[in-house]
Amino acid sequence: MSQARKIVILPGDGIGPEIIAEGRRVLETVNQQYDLGLSLQTCLFGGAAYDASGSPLPEDTLSACREADAILLGAIGGPQYDTAPRDLRPERGLLGLRSELKLFSNLRPALLYPELADASSLKPELVAGLDLMIVRELTGGIYFGKPRGIEERNGERVGFNTLVYSESEIRRIAVSAFEIARQRGSRLCSVDKMNVLEVSELWREVVIEVGKDYPDVELTHMFVDNAAMQLVRAPKQFDVIVTSNMFGDILSDAAAMLTGSIGMLPSASLDEAGKGMYEPIHGSAPDIAGQGVANPLATILSVSMMLRYTLKETAAADAIDSAVAQVLAQGYRCKDIASGEANEQLINTTQMGDAIIAALQAGADS
Ligand code: IPM
Ligand code: MG
Image 1 (cartoon, rainbow, N blue to C red):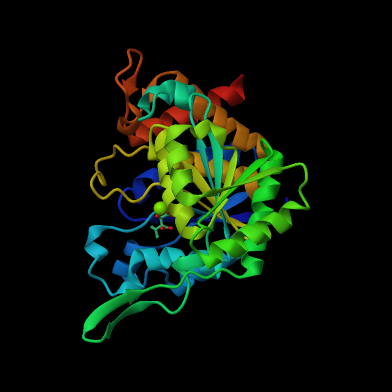
Image 2: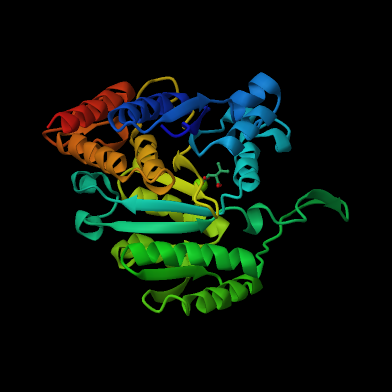
């Protein structure tokens, strides 16, 4: 057998360890079932790493991540870190990892499972069949632009950040989005704020240039305020949305909620070679941490994305996706996706993991 492929697991903070435990069990199950030859290693990251070593992204975690074929992350952060030095907060660890590993392309699908149409805050007919993908630029823009800081000017404090994108940064995220659109519905909507921002003017120009290489993909443009409105008015008009780091951060939370719960959505952050970090798009939910009620499905679906996008193990990824669909069809729900329907069975985090593994095993036996 070829050398084992390495997966680094970063449980993180809050509900991170609970949901990762289930994601890991699912990964171990398919590893065995499909003889994937994956070796799993767990490392400290985020607040947990800060508590243990004084840094949210310790050197040995970073080097393990560099050597890994793929990374599975739970969630990071919590109110106890709000007073830590800004550079040592868990979020900085996450931004550091994205940036160090050059994970510039962030895929955030919003897919509505038919069984969860009632859990959406929108009318079922507006969201039934929803299947859109947000491609968010992840290593540039206002999140990383310099100068940044808080300083005193003319006797008062001033906070500032810089929104900057180079042509090459825009080009590579546009290529990534066009490629994805081509594999889906061949419609790409680029979201910007071209009516106000010079950065967006360049963004739009470069996206149009890249579009010339993709005549088969229909390209449209939308201002971000309108896109936010359209997402909650008529979300099914979208196939793939490509946008900058901060706009993507905001729009992807809105898109997530359309599907009933942010607890259902996975994400992938990819570099140019397709290596990736996979994580649920929800946060560390400190309010429910330790209670065993968090929904592990976003993490389990992140495992599936990892198998599909980085490891190219389509059969194993398909098996996880159908196990999730099957378990939902059977009526199993964690608290966040329960809507009080008659056939529902409310279960906890571990029981959801058990249900998915049982469905995987039943699938393998049939
Ligand atoms: C996300 C999160 C992060 C972000 C935070 C935790 C730094 O909101 O992944 O969407 O803003 O990118
Ligand atoms: Mg966010």
